[in-house]
Image (tube, rainbow, N blue to C red; front, top):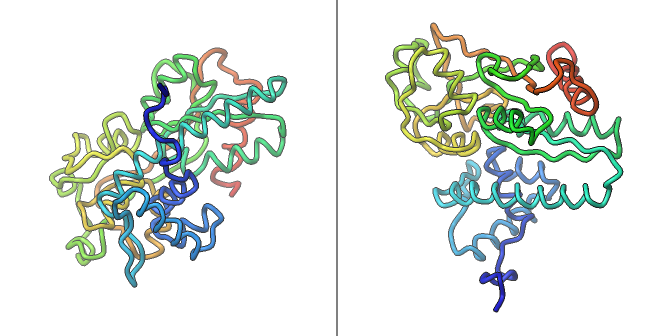
Length: 306
């Protein structure tokens, strides 16, 4: 009897799953297709095949663009796990195949991992062509746990202050912004939203332990009211675009959606939502080797060097 009860031929195409996640991350089919290097007609056909394969509708197509269905949002979150596992498999196999080359285990918060780390690693590989990096994307609390457990040589987090029990250094600055769908009442008001109003408003938010939520609650001085907790910035962004509750996210996570008009930024009054992104590690206070080189790349890519 097979150890694998599922028919492997019935599994969805990883490239199609990668495209679906890219559509969620970038806010539109065209932007998602560009990010994975696929022509838009091919991308549209790929998503249609994936919908037929899974038997559920994933994307709502209209003249205004493409948005994910509720089923699509769920599939995206499961797809992230599948793609992460596939990446670990490929990275692990590459490490075995190049056992004599240098390796680096990195953990990163979602904001850093989705929007900054890929560029940093590309620069690192330019200087160290034989370097193999194993990456885990998690929330900031889990990143610190990875570093403390020794499973990652260096981590990148986004909380409001340096985590306890680890060494840290600032690599970049970030800003959280309040976003709403275009039809939301806040999109038409002339007055800024106050801290008290934001505190009393249910929000789409990340789970406890995420750097974004910790930073927001620190700025407000009180826990947020959660209309719904979601495990990724992309899921929150798509939820807001679909007419859900407001959300506070990193500007890095909503730049394209703001530029496309899919989301609108609402100015705030009396709330400082700036924050610092940090590298964290244990052991000697001074980093060395590939971990030190990666942190140096991150700092050189930050403000004043872009």
